[in-house]
Image (tube, rainbow, N blue to C red; front, side, top):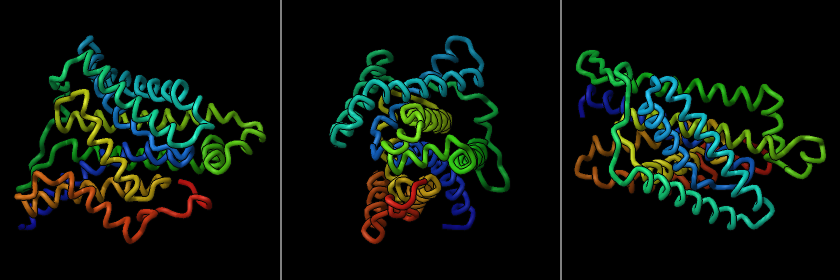
Length: 297
């Protein structure tokens, strides 16, 4: 592999890893507060992408359509918590896990019935599908925009967590929900905020994914959601920075394996999870994971 090819694959891996990172942040925040692996999270990403598609088809411009998609995904995420998760908050964790899987199947089949199983062309704007050619490199605008947006969002989330009263409440809730309630904090409202943040980020990740691979379908969130979950675990689930780092590592691994060993292209998904297993064998808490009884986020 020559240097030009290596740099090209690094660019591709950075872009793909950024999308995984955006979705992984939502996984890690919900887990950090509720110890819930929200397997419906990848489908929230799909909902956001489809709402952008619908809003654009109704005549809205792309920026307005993106706003509709993000807000719609936030509403779906918050309603999912209120309707499906909140009544089971005191139930065994396995009940919440099964419910999350059920919500995932429900959203996938609902959108499959509404839109059929045929992929839809995503209305990506020209300014985001433009390709630059610095030297021999192939540099899509998305490869520039997505990592920048991801890092800005990471900075914003960390600012909320460590510089605002809401972030302090989120971190306190992650340690002890009953005690936080006794201190007069509306725990349900803070949990809704966590779901809103996570769902909004999932929608942003889904929109960028749909722009990079310009088609959407009701099952698009399955494998992407699983990879984002793997990224969160790889980086250290419960750590926001770890989720982003895990996303980047997973994206780089997936791209570089295919570039270095083209004959393994059909196994790139399996290799990503195999790499996750290897890391967890030597560091079960993930790269940046810590004792969750002492630290959150």
